Length: 409
Image (cartoon, rainbow, N blue to C red; front, side, top):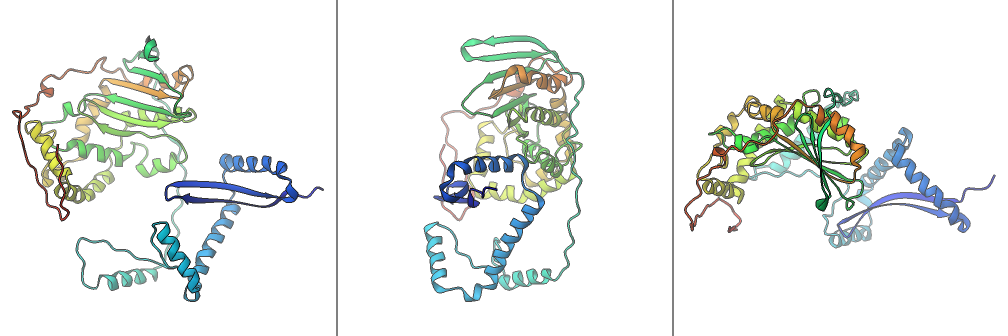
């Protein structure tokens, strides 16, 4: 049997110039038999991409990594001076922080408390004596939003040759804009504009848009929590982030031809069954102090005040008192959002590397299967009226900061 042409091989990752992540696979060919190792390196790389690694391979890599760190800690006291000097020089050159083997506890607070270092170390050491239980295993779930009803049809089709755009109106009044491009190979960008956005935001409820986007992001879907979705969608190129513009709710995501079906399902699941979960509300309440720290001590606060002033004090653009923002409930978000998502005008734009003929069935089985929508976006003339300050005008807004800075508009 002919000996293997591979003398040795390795795979690694490094960061070049503090900016470029570079992964590599290398093989040293025996007896200059490099022609024989080219197929090996290609096939092994593809095998890793297609199938990942076996449990034994991962266990081996984990053992080697942990052992290397353990040995560094054990040999900390006897490291050679020249080794430490070289590491220090390398850290300076790489604009990195030099660290010694072992634990590093870092505490960041607004004010330095007495004995903070000793208390931090003591708490950590005390915790190390507490037994730790193995995490409970979680069953892998399946994405439970594949059926949205009877697929719709393309009621009308229009071509705009000079822009290379195709427009569909589906049987349920959903409008679809299709633009095929070739400058992002293998990428498809999707944007759904739904309803009327801040035009319908209830009066006297400032920053309800901030509250609503936060609890929707943290609430996942009705059948899957945010954590569930992270597990279910791991390794898939899909996403659906809700935004609120002045005249529409938006749902944006980027996908690939392979994951296009799942992307459509995820977007429609977000439209039809958002998860209004208590944990999203709790998480938002934790963030409220940080929100007001930013508003009170950065230009973000004065800018929000300026937006309110420019809109004549319209509550949709003003800053909410902290007590009011804290009082908002999931019912408040749902009361505003649900009618818009379920019945509002919906226009879907798809741009990127796709074949319209191949994606049509997926679009019809998801967006085309939704209940009939409003055929056109409402004008809402009164909601569009704002009392702009008499111009020309000058206005100064201030905030408290230890760092002297200013912003001019």
